[in-house]
Length: 260
Image 1 (cartoon, rainbow, N blue to C red):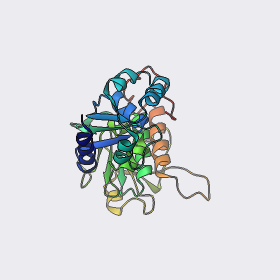
Image 2 (cartoon, helix red, strand yellow):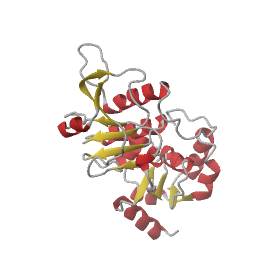
Image 3 (cartoon, helix red, strand yellow):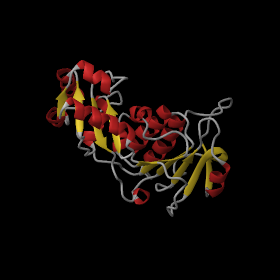
Image 4 (cartoon, rainbow, N blue to C red):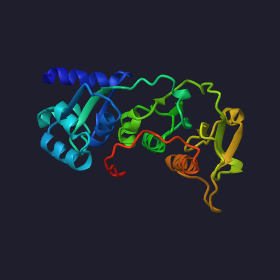
């Protein structure tokens, strides 16, 4: 692909809601692991990228090597104004997920999330815990560059969608909010729709009303709230460890610590 064609594709992907720019090895690694075939993968330090992939993600290193196009540092800087430390970006189509509301596992719903990094961290936790989907109702764009960085590219592992309103699913709807029954082992059904409020304003009143139950995460006296991603992690992993959550995708057989 020519430099002009690469520039046009990256610029289009930053505007086109059907496409995404993946920044850094972790995001590209996860895209490859979950079956995404990028349209473009570029780096101005290909040898370093492939050496790091051999160390941290040997399961995708050969595929990455076959896709990777070397570019000059000047071209890379033009295409990645805030370049990732690993000197790698890719362009891909966003996955299309038919029937996310019927997939196994809980659905995480975020009401008006305000911080894209937090939103991305929620996606990362949800993917790790085997959730069926992450839906956002208002708030920041769940497919923003900051949100994708926060998820380390795990937007490619499960549906991440922004419906205009809460879709009907036939699942039990549980609101995580103050003033409810204490969260404990076995509290939540494995197929629940889990509603989490915004970082500042909490859950909207109309969403509290549609919930069949309100559940509260117990905290020591004097502590009023948790970070959004932390709250989602507590709920999903308690549910998973209780045996009611989905098992999630099969393991790749490769070590994948949180830092990679």
